[in-house]
Amino acid sequence: MKTNILIIVFLFTVCLTAQEPILDYNPQIFDIELPQGGSSLEYLNISNLGDETLYYTLNLCAGETRNDGREIDDSELTCNQEDFMPGSTVTWIFNLHNNTTDDENFLDVIFYFPEQVVANSAGDFIGGSGGVMEFLPEISTSNMLMWHGEDGEGNGVIHNGDTAVAEINVTIDPCYYEDLDLEYFIYGDNGNVFSGVYTFRTLCIGWCFMSCSSGELEPGESDTIELQFCAGGLGEGLYSAAMIITDSCREQYEIPIYLTVLLVDNDNNNLPVDLIALSNTPNPFNPFTTIFYTTNCSQHVRLSIYNIKGEIIRNLQDGVAPAGEHELVWDGTDASGKQLPSGIYFCNLSTTGQTLSRKLCLLK
Image 1 (cartoon, helix red, strand yellow):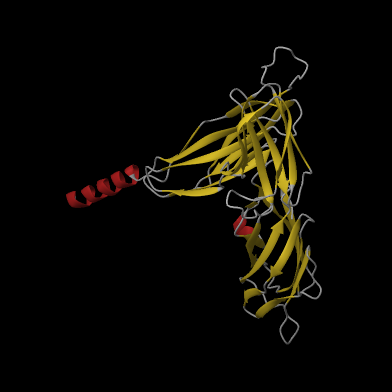
Image 2 (image 1 turned 30 degrees about the vertical axis):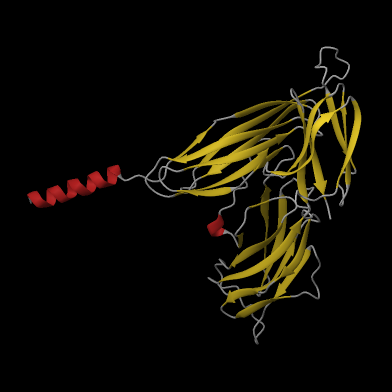
């Protein structure tokens, strides 16, 4: 009897001391002020204070926090990705789940992508008990994709309880920052139609960019996420967003983000004498764009190109520039002369006391 009591006490103690992964983050809020055309690189630190492996995902939401109410386990359609980077070419893996309650089989599937997404290739839906649901390239377009699958008796090939998988390779417009909605229709062999929208959330909101969207941390480990803020092309005012962190236990943490863009008054005599201005044309461009800048006095100037992760790609100028207007041509290449892919880049112009940033869109 005494032994049984000791065992129970031991198990109870183990249950009390066992920990799940514990997510900790800093800072709790981003409140940034930038002049028009200015930029700033900030950092988010994420740590695992628990005793188990922590998996986390990050999403940027413009304005108020969004909640699409999507429950993955109950959806007809899921994907291995929930977000995207403008200008990227990626392969999305879609899972088609037949969760019907009336033994209806899936016969046809149609995807409608927005015009900002071009489907380069698509595969069959494989995994149905009745066979393969074949992709129909002769009917499909770059934005509308169709699949069909039926057995010899005219029944759909994806039966109740089945999950079929297909891969789709897509290219996303590098100058598109909004969320992408994939509209889908699934046709059953009993005449029912199941429809819905799968939303891919953008990793950038036009003025804030993340270096990554997910991570894995062992106990005691930390990650540092870069956030690039850019006020290029923004008018004076307050801009808001939210970063949503989701952990392994599906707990969500919200970090408010505020960007205040301050008006640059070129007629203000109290401005520094080394005031600079920055612009470029054309934008978007392929592959050449001309960058213009103005200085009010002779000074040291550094003109550099960065990628969306804040990594320097190329220095276009690093030296003394006389007062006046200047222009340089960038051909869309890195420091080694390699042509860069389509996407968003930043042109940063720095002097001793001032930095301006311009968002560049390379579109091929």
